[in-house]
Structure formats: structure tokens, C-alpha cells
Length: 419
Image (tube, rainbow, N blue to C red; front, side, top):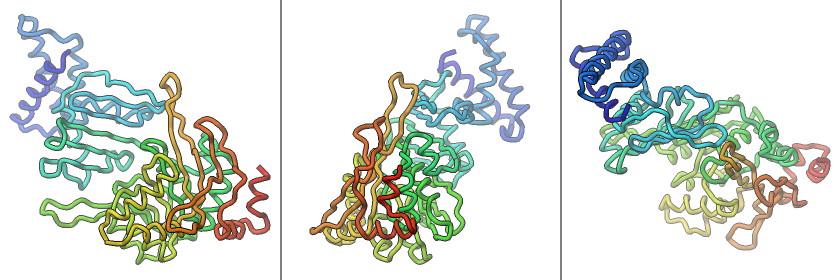
């Protein structure tokens, strides 16, 4: 069955449903009966020479029902546990399975049907998608996935990504089990988070930054107050003391917007021990300079190609706030307050059936004689797949002393040498 024939049948079914006043959400039996009659009428015309008959009418009926009452061609993909991401470009659907292999959807579909499915997902959120608001992000599927979508006139066609994330209890220990992290590095990072270290997690898209940030949050003492701010919520670490906050887009009249910067600003008045920002992209980074100056710990993710680039990206994001603060001042604040940068990366293994996500480097920010960043690696790999080794270096004395206080009688060097 071609997509043209399917779209013709789908539009006919929708017109009949609208004409008969059927509520697809409440009257599924009526929708099934109508879909069957629509397909039967088409088959009858096809047998008389008006078109090509369907190879499997029952499958077509099922697809029509899913399209009208559910999420169309996305229905089965959204239900599958092994699908990590779904990509929609006009009438094309592809998806990434857990092993890292990219596949095309089995059934043909149309852009109109895909747009309808996206709008159904958006209908369960407080986000809008229309010509006046053609770019949107939202939590969908009861918070188990993030939808990012662009429609015309911004894009040539419908363009959307649905990223499903596992709501599992990620810890540094589980990352060791996944070969993302060495036991030495996990012990060090756990002690650092217990000691209130400020940590940036950097890496390219899909490298596991959010999962690693979750693991760091799990290492924070339960008595510490954690305030987590996100554009679209992805973090789901159980908090004994603290809360999560999610940005909100403007309403139809342009009012009521709550930005990520607004969230970071308000958390400063809520006595946090640690401020977590799911992903730093822009002006909210400037508010982080106030946070770290106020003595709050910081944990965030940022897109970057290396640990060194992450520090530069954070400064550039802060300068985007346009507060007329000199760059050297922003650099000095972050250089004196950020303790560690963890850089993660990913690669698709030969054959395209699996993805390796690993920590490439754990780098300490060390005091410098100038208003710039100076850092040195504590743990490093030569490449993905090679061992994550301790370099023999220790963090600056201030952080080292805080960590050793957590370790009590054991020194940090003894901890690392014992592994």
C-alpha cells in the first residue's frame, strides 16, 4: 500500500468521523466499524478497476484506527522498550534502538498523519505548537520522554525528535558496571560530591551527560538541599531535601513565561546546598556566577567537545545575559568556584549494533596567576575503550582537604593508590 492510498483512506475516515459526530477517544468501537467500512468500500472499487487493491485490508484497518484514536505510525515505536529515540522528518520516520542502530519505520506514513500524532502528544502538556510558536519542547508520555519539534515556517517540513529516557536509579556504581567509569574515579567523585564539590559534566549530544549528572546527584548527602532547574525535565533522582523546577513558555497573550534563568535566580532565595541545572545554554549561566559567589555548590551539563571547551562554553553562555560584566570577571568567578569537569563521549561500535558511552576525562580546575582557567587531569583515557587511569595528580589543596575530611582517617592518595 502506497502512502498516497493510505492518506486517501485516512482522510476519508476522518471526514466520516467528523460528519457522524463520533468521538474517537470515547467511541473506539464506532471508529473500528467506520474504518472497516472505509477499507471495504475502497477494496470494492479497486476490484472494479478503480485503483490497486490492498494486500492486507486488516492491517490497513488497524493502522487507520491507531491513526484516528492514537498516535498513528508512532504507536508501536512509543510502546517499545528498546527504542531510544524517534526521528520524524515530514513523512519519514526513523528510530534508534538501544544498541545504537538507526532503522527506518516499517509502514509508510504521511506528514499530515505525523503532525497529527505530534499534536496529540503536545495536547497533554502546557506547551503550544502553531504558526506563532513553531518551535516547542515538552515532556510527553507521562514524563518518560522529551519531545522537540519544529514546524513551518521555521522548518521546510515537520521535524521532530522524541527522546525516551529510562527513569532508572542511576548511580556511580551502576556506571562502573556499564564500563563508563573506573572504580577509582567513582570513589573519587563520590567523595567529591560528599564534600560539596562543584562539577560540570560536558560532552556531545547523546553521550550520557544527563545520566551522569543523575549519578552525581545520587552521591550528594541526603541532608543537603538540592534545587534542580531544567528547561524540560529529564532528571528523576529521588530527593530527601529539595525539589525540581521546570521552565514554562509564554501563554497565548505572551505573559506568564518562566525562563531557566528565572528558576536559577529564585532558587538562590531557597537556601540550596547544591543548584543543579539540567543543561546550561544561555543567560542562566550568569545567575550561576551569583550562586557560586553565594557559596552554593553547582552541578550542570553543557555541550562541549572537551573539558577545556566546557569552561569556555560556560563563560560564553554567561556573557549572553548582556549584563555588561567584563569577561575577565566572569572567568575569575568560575575559575575560583568550579572544582571539577567530567567529560563524557560516545561512539557507535563496528557493525552499528551498540553504542559505547564512557568518561574520557575527569579534570580539576586549579588556581591560576591570571584571570583564566588552569586545569589538570585527575583521570584520563587515551581514547574510548582504553582504561580510565589515575594520572597521579590530586585536586587543589582546598578540595583535597574537604574530600579527606569526608574520608576521615584515609588520605585521598591512599584511597586512589589502594585501587
